Image (cartoon, rainbow, N blue to C red; front, side):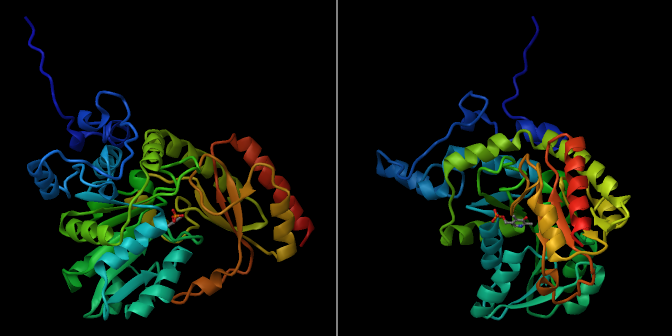
Length: 406
Ligand SMILES: *Cc1c(COP(=O)(O)O)cnc(C)c1O
């Protein structure tokens, strides 16, 4: 008789990313035998004996039902899935990406500390430093996204966090993350290196292979993937996990199990969606690059993007988000372009299945360590899952309106 070997637990460490995306967080203790972990709503958890309550209290950090704020099986399944896909030791959940960024920074910074923040940071990240951390006596120095190992010159004795966002928001500079991590480790072992890894998602840049301490996702974008949930995650390595978990808890961060369910549902198709976003975006980017009216395209996979060599070296792929600079431009031309678009709607955020477009005014005001010198109009697009011939026709007509209004 053949002996049947039943494995209780999948070994996710040896799997390819697309397999992990399908399999992660589907332990039977979360799914109860269904394919998807159910939505477990709850605030109060009731105990029948003092012993039971004491046991739950002792294990409250450990994916055990204790009180709704600490999560239910739905959250535990998603947290486990994020760690299995992205790496690290634990995943803290936040009601949006911005909360994940502020939660991670506030967990590690105190009065008198110094923060090194990339100059191309997402605008609300910059505002957090300038308007809130400054009030708490935390000093921020912005650094050139292309600084690489020379960041060691900016590290002070009180530097506690180095924050990266790669590629940068709007202008898309890809950072030399390994050089920055090496400089941090050489200067002071206590420095915590954090990365806003939203553009790459957990798929295209493996933060923990690069010794990043905390990898942050605006899960609102590609993980959710359908423009219907706000959510943030911060995955920490072993040395930072306890401090991140404890402080996020102190800040009262919690999320709805319904939102987590949708995020997990979105996550299952992350691999195929990203592959298609990548393909479509490269087609549109290359079409833009050969136009005479386009100055240059800032897509990390194109040589015209600052840090393209680091992208080629460190990333597994790209996605649907990039920007481009026109040779000329004014507000009337930009308005003529944007007002008539058929498929590209204007909207903040990105990462859903739909194409989006945005005219970026005033980048120069968002940079202090570097200068934005481009004279032409900067436009950011998110390339969705539509047929690229429709998208290119839409952009072609838009650029004709742009040029006619110049
Ligand atoms: C959108 C975004 C965020 C913020 O996420 P929200 O969920 O909208 O708060 C943070 N970082 C980057 C790079 C983003 O694009």
